[in-house]
Image (tube, rainbow, N blue to C red):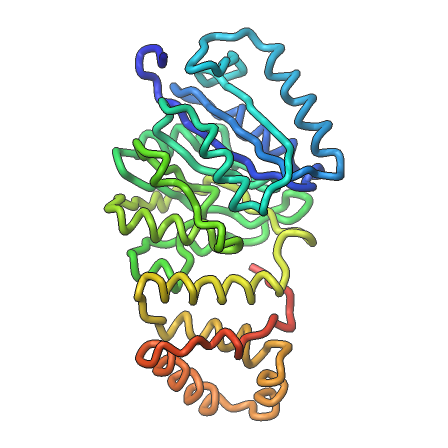
Length: 321
């Protein structure tokens, strides 16, 4: 039973071989301050580095703090400036990050109404992140702020291009910084992800919540999370997968591709891709040729349901924010 109906915020961390960074992630969660409980769940995919050792030691650390309450079998400990932290973790085979997040959602307390995931190389930027998001939440809402790209050493690189989004513009500008968001929902079913999306699971969720009538609120004055970029985080191959998954999701939702998205996809994964078409187009360095082909592709996709995936290839350059 939840005493005094104090809010419970569930944070799920999917984890695999991020031992170099996961301690920062873990500490940034339990150090959150405010009048709420934190239901913290880590789902690890059988890491082979020192992640398992870190998680075991972290669990011991949490249990050394006095217990304050039990809610539906989970024990919350008085860790710091919040009402209490419950820490649950497991390490087992999974089908990737999307599957790990779904496993975490299944372990959520039924009493929890607030949810997000925080990847094991990212971190909350300040101790008042959850308090800020919670104070702006309402039933059936997604509240989100800004995020900062950081490097392996934790040094700021540049700000994530966060923006106000609609159910249509979300496809073209990726405007929601996922680690800086908080979802308020009464139903776990609203939160489950589709396993076919391994690169754009967050975009899938935003589109799903838009369709369910969730309100989206952008806090444009707050940088709430650090989104880490390092050698193992994002590669050119993921950009190709991202575009293929976006096209698949748009088709399933009967959405038309915008000129902005078409241009980005064309330049990254066609003209400057590693495929045969990219090698041919590089000989014709003309914006008129590019403009013509982009328009033709838009017509083919939007009016004739042509799948352009076979034209795409991995970009020649690694993805860089």
